[in-house]
Image (cartoon, rainbow, N blue to C red; front, side, top):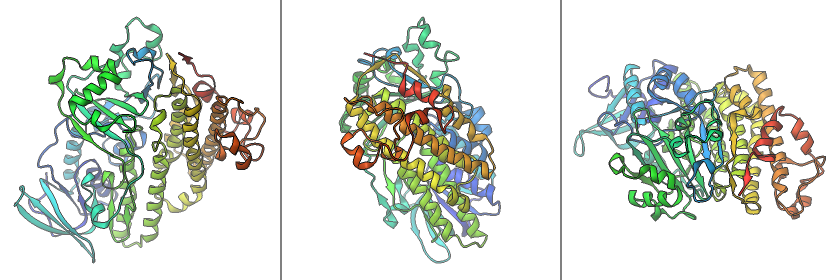
Length: 579
């Protein structure tokens, strides 16, 4: 795969790891600055197997824009991967033996801005070919045996041909760790950091796939008519949710389906899922329809993998000492919203910015600090989506509100900025940072509120549907990703999106407070969105009511334009019926 038999002595950039993060970074660097010499060391000796290779198969809008438009693999995504019908969620009903009884949240049709399901082996094999074609030096079967940082150039030693094989040392101006959980630089530099989100996962790939629509009687017209066309649900990233867990179902273009359990050990001990046999027993207990679909198909199971306590943070990811971390070599959140590839896209974009500028003679210390701060601040905000939240993962009323708010944050902040190529523009980002902070601060408060809401109202709901793309406040922000705003319009849109988040918080509080014995405040009482809680004893001291903020009436009619028609169905008047 390499463009030469032996590595050169000197490179501009050495990338440690030729997986998803390392390969796409090599392509991005060569596109951004074609004269950049790039070395990539990948320990895998040959092509990756299709299907039974790596997880991280579900992608969302930001990363798909990166893979398609920035890296230049749109043709591969459209022709060789599965066009995805969004994220779809099913919440528990009874013993989960009837999918039609479970509350469903998801799009009724393919969302306008595309996303894809990735067969990782297929994608990385194609990316490897393109890296070589782009003129980077990709060496397969190259194990990184040592890294020495310092001076004008860093030294990287690789071993090829297995243990005891040929040792080669190359020098590079920049070293980027894309080695995944090998954590080559992270361990060397003492950058490890836990984050308090303890969740485990196990998964396998099933040859021949499966279709969840076969779990529902084919004459159930009401259930099938939710979708614009039968058969589309199978192409979603389907989430089967319950208290303390969710199960992913992701179809792959090579034919199999990826099936994984993600669970909080407080509710589902690791020993219940850390072997294939244990996982199948767990599925039999908590997801019986999936279990029935697996019966008699033991020979179709292509692999089984697991990872305990998979989420972690990182103290620093970019350095003006000319090293950087990307992908799982740095920090990893949780796969619930499929953010892994998004963080690859963002980190690779920050790295490309600082590396190409530094190679052209620019002083980049200020940029490095700014990019570190933005990346880690965004990560910390997104961590609140998950940390200590699995307790209400089976509550459809709370989850409907949560997913609505989280999507507005995602489409209205990080993704919007990425699609408009603004994350690396320091002056622009400084100007819009106050509105980003507004969005993040409201979200942090809401995540606490969601736990409180579940504690006072954990009823089971049945046979409901929340069609996400029918809601104007959501679909508008999704469509605006590709609006092509100029700078002034983009600043105005970010401010409007912060206003939307404030209105969302007021309406969520109003709905959640109704579950309290004394009900919610009146529609004309000002509510501070940054102080919402379901602890009435705190309201006066916190200044929640009667001061600054929005009334419920203002939130319904106000700054978001169309929010109420969206949010009423999700939270205020859900099309659900309690058991």
